[in-house]
Length: 328
Ligand code: ACO
Image (tube, rainbow, N blue to C red; front, side):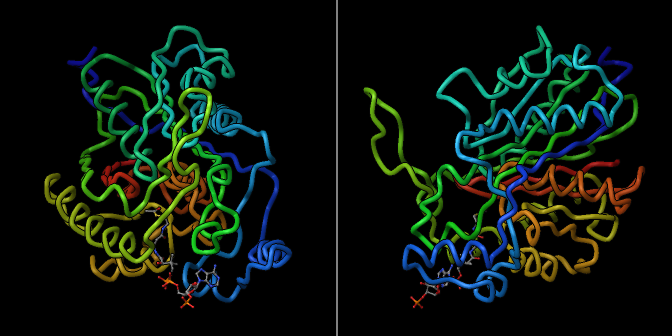
């Protein structure tokens, strides 16, 4: 199989957002009841975020992930029984174990596929996609569902205005199939664990209790500078390794953390902002879900066309980052 089908190709995408839309105004009004001051103006000006979707309490990541996966399979015209690899990128797994991927597998009605989670925070989707591509290129899988899904609202300190306004919940998925033409033409993954403290949720469950801090903490300015630097460098190297330049890229889909990061990055790379898919205004930062969500939105609204070159870039806690170059 691997000799005749040495590549992997994205053949479908899907996404799902929980129904509860929370505008900046609604969030500010809610925070005001706890004597915490924020405004639509502050949030929109600093981040570009206008709204986010928040899952009801108790709704788990697997529920969002399963629906996004169903939609991706329907888009690809593939039955769940044909899938032999399921990878979920998430930092908000349903449980300590089993993995969210196994719960999604049961929800899809698939039996027998390999299923596991990948934990690389906001870089999780590019890590998971690169992993699935590597399985397929090695001949160890033929049809993968790769999902990014998060209920980040469950790890936010809703009394910390510096972080809680930035994030939202959601899920996105792609179906990746063995192919005799590429497909995924380049990928690189990186991490620098010495920078773990600039973005962290440093709690765990032990001996029946949560120990440490259960909430996300962030040094916003350090993350901002680091994100722009590593994404710029990685965009240049992944395209150069493929014998291409940024001028060959039709669409950039960087992790949707903040419109200012996207704007700075596009400027550094000399890419017009019109070539950058932006959904952070609509979804806020959905961590591992942000890239497949944005990809699905831009495929469905007709922006991303078959044959075009798309650069997917993740960056986040760890510190982690990576890029995947895809011919659609
Ligand atoms: N509403 C009103 N005021 C606020 C809010 C808020 N929601 N949050 C912070 N402030 C106040 C601060 O208290 C501070 O007030 P002070 O001057 O009286 O002390 C002031 O605004 C400035 O705060 P800074 O933290 O310095 O604001 P900054 O300009 O750095 O913007 C932000 C903060 C938006 C987080 C910025 O640092 C940033 O974009 N960082 C990138 C990080 C990011 O996007 N992370 C997402 C997760 S990481 C990832 O996904 C890769």
